[in-house]
Amino acid sequence: MVTLYMYDLQTILEHFIADDLFLSAVPYGEGHINDTFAANFQKNNGDRYRVILQRINHLVFTDPPGLMNNVYGITTFLKQKIAAAGGNVMRETLTVIPAKNGDLFYIDRDGNYWRMYVFVEDAITYQSCRNEQDFYNCGTAFGNFQRLLSDYKTDQLVETIADFHNTVRRFEALKEAIRQDKSGRAKNVQPEITFALNREKDAGAIIELLRSGKIPYRVTHNDTKLNNIMIDNQTGMGICVIDLDTVMPGAACYDFGDSIRFGASTAAEDETDLSKVTMSLQLFEVFAKGYLSVAKEFLTPAETESLAVGAKIMTFECGIRFLTDYLNGDTYFKIHRANQNLDRCRTQFRLVADMEQKMDRMQEIVKKYSVK
Ligand code: ADP
Ligand code: GN1
Ligand code: MG
Image (cartoon, rainbow, N blue to C red; front, top):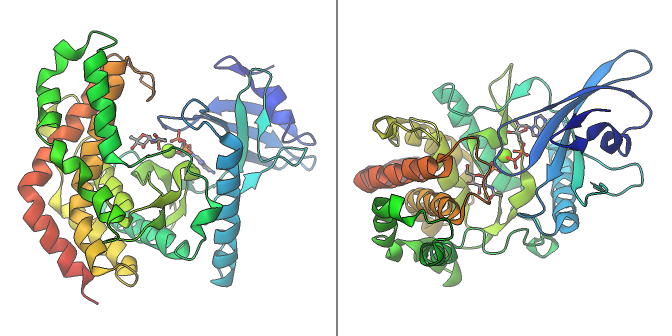
């Protein structure tokens, strides 16, 4: 029996794959939310293959069946479009492997929800930009993802996390965490709290554009960090957008902004040496060029204008979320060492301050690449 993280993985895997020989399973990837494993199997003819097995974090995603319906609906829709364009339906989007009983998930005896995906081979996810061309290719891939889903009916999607990018709500949650100070940590983070409180008025910037109808709701990914896109080993293309748990109606700039937040930073999300943390205008330009090469065809002028501000707001929101979690005692994001959420918050706030200095230039770059 293979027990990892206290899970009886072999038994869980048998609920998805019963005919092939199970060889091994190892923890995989660097996500902050789900538990991901790569499992190896051997067919009767000796061929070996891998699958992705994931425990859906049901404290974060409280409706796993609804979430899996979203994922199945989106990937089925994408496969039709990929096939029509002559693409490879098994590599250019995720493929859900249902449980033997036909369900899209399996619930173990402890109430954990498990799902399985075909392993996208010959491709890899990166934690930081390997080169500029990769980042450009990520831009085109995320632009294309929005384009392909632009006629997906939003009423088919459940909201997997309510108010996910409602930065005003995120700000309220931070204020509540400061008030409660559950872990007695507020005294350690007065500069960070002040940084956030000084920017309260920024929190509504994007949500108000959506609410007033100045920019439209689109189907967006909402978690477009670099390690949520598989880069093809041969071509360097962003071959497959993964981590579809947060696909919901949102603003186009959420996806643009979150990519910049993570991928245009010159340091890791949890870097402790803040002197290393800047938002590279060079990387910003590379991504904007890639994203807009596809997205300029469908974005409205107001959406285009929101992209640079969106990058700042997404970064601010993420910093607020890390700070809130630190104050609440690290209950949401996985941490691997003490103070990791605080370090993550600090990098995000450093990036926000840097973007404030560079905002005019960011706007100019967006303008340059949005000319049709
Ligand atoms: P989380 O929500 O925790 O971030 P992800 O769905 O992003 O989980 O998966 C974590 C990591 O596992 C990804 O960054 C990627 O490296 C890897 N991964 C996920 N799905 C696949 C897949 N179908 N094929 C290959 N690798 C995958
Ligand atoms: C989480 O699941 P993962 O690691 O791709 C989080 C994002 C944050 C990100 C910060 C469902 O993303 O919203 O931006 O961490 N996902 C969820 O790195 O909360
Ligand atoms: Mg992920």
